[in-house]
Amino acid sequence: MLSDADVAALYDLMNPWDPDRFPSDAFYDRLVLAADSVLDVGCGTGSMLRTARESGHRGRLVGIDPDRAALDRARRCADVEWVLGTAADAAAWDGEFELATMVSHAFQCLVGDEELRASLTAVRTALRDGGRFAFETRHPQARAWEDWSSADTGDASEVVDPSGRVLRSAHHVESVVGDVVTFTETTSDLDGAVLRVDRTSLRFLDVPDLADFLHGSGFAIESQYGDWHGGPVTAASREIVTIARRV
Image 1: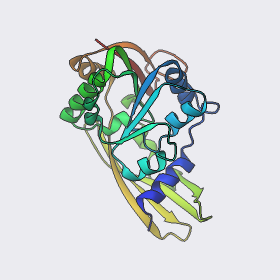
Image 2 (image 1 turned 90 degrees about the horizontal axis):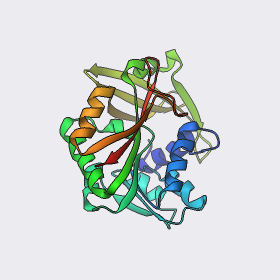
Image 3 (image 1 turned 30 degrees about the vertical axis):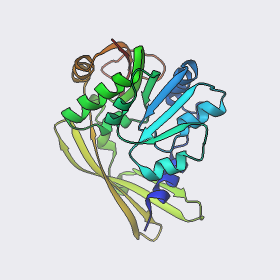
Image 4 (image 1 turned 180 degrees about the horizontal axis):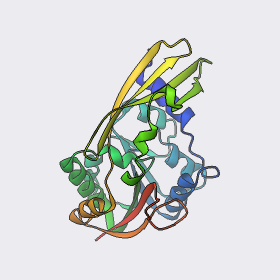
């Protein structure tokens, strides 16, 4: 079986943060390095903030996440503040940050209406007047979940864990109910022995519904893109990349 700590380590192996390779990482890297104080909501293992610190950021960097094992891994970087908590817990800070982020589609983990409203209100509280909130969500029109299925459709990946063992990860969509997609991720060894099954639900908000939640929580949309290069949201966009400002 795989422990939570094992999963956190595998996440870093399968999802390296590299602004030189990935346009999404470069997009956030520029924003973070330009801000004097940053709150990363759903920071996971802390790769983005750790990279910013290594790149010379000298301001305040804080990451918050409910996953204790991921935070344990993040805490290897001692000159960033790491806090155990949910997005709604960001309300503990009052006007302390210039920038808040939710990267790697973490925003989609906010599934229920009340959870969304409470989280957005808390992030707004943590920002100073005029502070910005940057995040992305997959555009529902692209129906990305149709590419998430079991090994027979090719949506499976292999990784070598720190012990040298080859592990295989595959996804299976269980349900699509309204704008919420629930799927499982199964990790197994090469002999097919199942080591862990994780279940996740993600919400796919379209542009108008996303705007309603933001405006209702005290944000104005400063800019919105359909790709990581600053292109507009179009009928072909797979992403909704948003920078919202506290008003």
